[in-house]
Length: 480
Image (cartoon, rainbow, N blue to C red; front, top):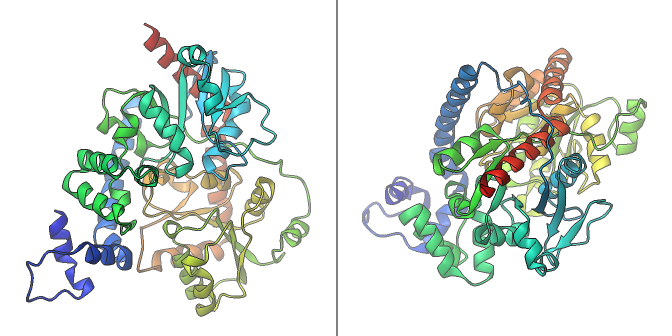
């Protein structure tokens, strides 16, 4: 299949049609992966994702229909005490959405279990955390306590989770799988340790010949993102898992299909405001943030990446800028120069419309959400994550534009504006933005539906109850 794929797109690199059987060199494969990343996604990634979305939508419908409920109905769980636990997770000020998530959940968990939070030996010291934490080496120095305490691992697809991955693969526990795709974590961790043999072994074991090719590329520092998202390498991280917690229907079904004998619980991302919404003049707050008080405000939240498709957002706004009220685009987060988005904004005539905040504290982040008009939250390809920024925006009653796939299918249709996945085109995005920009009532209706859904489905105490019940059930099952 892999060779056929490259045969089909051989013309992308000017391959000589008189030599159709010549093998591709690794350098040519790298050229395809890097220079034609978007073309590969459009030819293969988008149709596959659209098919997956149709299947996912059908499974959600069948499950909720048979249960006599809908995806928007909250779980009902009784209050229990789950005992002592060691929770392996990054914590603020580590720059990580998972660190923020764990810290936000900690106060609600505190009345439901006794937790000690385990951070990496080289992690920055948590600030204003308020709950017991230890560094990994300190925790493991007391072997008797370590053996007697059940573990929960918050696992995500970045290098800061290296110590958690190693512990989860060695000692059984409950794994909170924040990202379905863990390829980047395995690659960065193992190749940084110069353990290319172990990486190759896992890649071949779980992904066959294609895994071997990608391992070859990675070992030579030639690999690109085009296929990493298709080679998740999830199974080895879960090989010792006693149970798995996920945040979306998509991840729940994938884990069930991959490891049918392991208990899986879907617990939605919790929502709790970092600050109360004060009764203050909105124009004054906008001025303090640097926003124009009377213009339509579009925002893109968090660190800008290729997957968030800000190039499509800039192009879409440029295409409709004469058709909508005066506006500003705010990127609330860091914008790497390597993405070339500032240059694109200049070329598109949006240099005076686009503003970039850099990384901001949580209170400021929330203020930008509160005083925006439309939030754009595109992700493709996705690592299977649920977006905490999307939950914050929906909880604040903001209309959000998303791709119609993945975890976006967890939410009712009237609570989001869904568009087809686009790469080379931005027509669907432009149409959605134009409609929202020109219809204040539509913005209010979508935002209100979003806030209602989040209030019922994502309350932090409700999510903490679900954690405690599942953790207690897992611990009890393994004591028997």
